[in-house]
Length: 270
Image 1 (cartoon, one colour):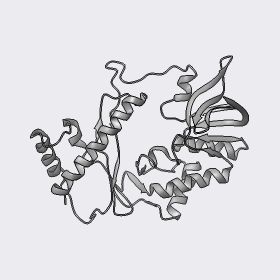
Image 2 (cartoon, helix red, strand yellow; image 1 turned 180 degrees about the vertical axis):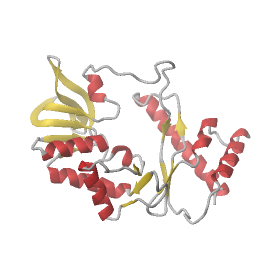
Image 3 (cartoon, helix red, strand yellow; image 1 turned 30 degrees about the horizontal axis):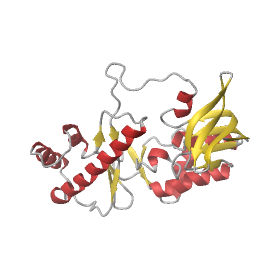
Image 4 (cartoon, one colour; image 1 turned 60 degrees about the horizontal axis):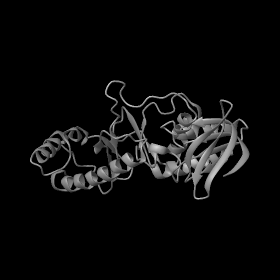
């Protein structure tokens, strides 16, 4: 395993938190490496299609305010669709580019397609990370490691204390595979309670394989900027997302549910 001493700070995870940390560090003259397992920045906002910002987005100023202003200037964000009093909607593809541009302008080095294997710990101090990608295993040292992986992968591997699931039942939060459907007639008014009732009846008759708890999610999601709609309905429970085998089974199950729902929607929803 090769090892380098190249950076002052390594940020693990390129979601909103990791993006902000990396840009802030680089702007302050810190040699910064930002690592993400995917092929873009943004985390749940981009590769997971959670295309809503809270209505308070950027109210406190700072890097996020700059990001919101840039997205709005480029026509990739709107405060006037979906739930105007709660959410602002953005274009996830444009956001990928804008996040990347911010990092490049700040001088952040970006490494995609890379998993964090573990923290490098010496004498009780974290001094870098071990990672895995197409190049093999690689260790890079740094003065600071910022864990923005979402699951706390670097921190947990370094021995930091953590908890998973309910302290009573040990059950984990349900999982959702967001979907984005184009060609939606936004002028139509949908009676979601009626659709939910039809869906629940179909489930009770055995015409769908959805469990009971999914029905309440049919009207969740958001209207997009390009005549599309995201939906947040296909929950999978009793899965530990920090276990790759369980996570893979959940992905497979959720994708089956997506297509089952689409076929249902075509026959029941205007």
